[in-house]
Image 1 (cartoon, one colour):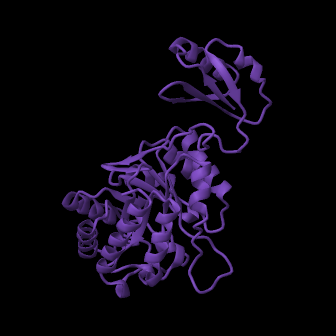
Image 2 (cartoon, helix red, strand yellow):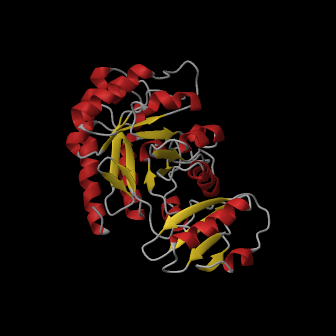
Image 3 (cartoon, one colour):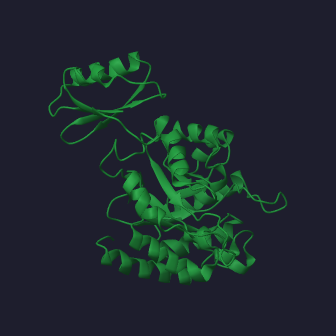
Length: 336
């Protein structure tokens, strides 16, 4: 349920409503608009007597939120949330582009890629220091050594760092280096991890699970917001279907549908979504046309030598061409 305060409601009246919510055993979540304050009532599924709150001074009305996710719903926040990552504002008119290799393999590879994507127009650098892999024998990442290389790349290029965190225990280490914490597809429903990153102040990039519905994805975001962290980027990265010609199926439908359901920014990962480098650019352009707020693209100077996901990685020249084409599509729909 959400409680809409009257225009001009005093801080005392707002606090009285918050105190009543907490007395009744719920959490209060405030959204301060330009004209009025909206208070979300968060808790279990016990029946709520809405009249209890509607008769309080300063209250205009209460509205029942029908979706199981509350904080991520547009019912609570009608305006788009802007997630700031240094100078990038995901969710406004600018489309942010994150680029870099799937994994940090060595210092030379990462720094070469970082400078190349910065020159081409990327605004943030991605790279995995910890890599969850299907096979225990595959490259698992460099760990803290990889994080240190990422930090050096940020120092040289000014690009903020996006990297994955896999367990709650890794969070203190990764937050020392990263600007954005990525929750990978395999961890989308790792609820202890979601709650733990929700207690940080870092922006979170939450990837959709390979077989997750949109509701399940939004419920995972709800876990993060329920712990106090509202800086969440929702990422469509392809789902598993019966199709065999591509690695996954990029759900372009998800972009406009999610934009209608949540106030959080939506970004798309066409690299994982299709899994073949020669189709990454057209899918990326389609994502922008559908309304995505950003892209995350895998780039590698020598994909044929990559330790992970070389087949879906663009060489820097092709990434630069993607950025140029992206600007044209963005301009056509009134964005930049």
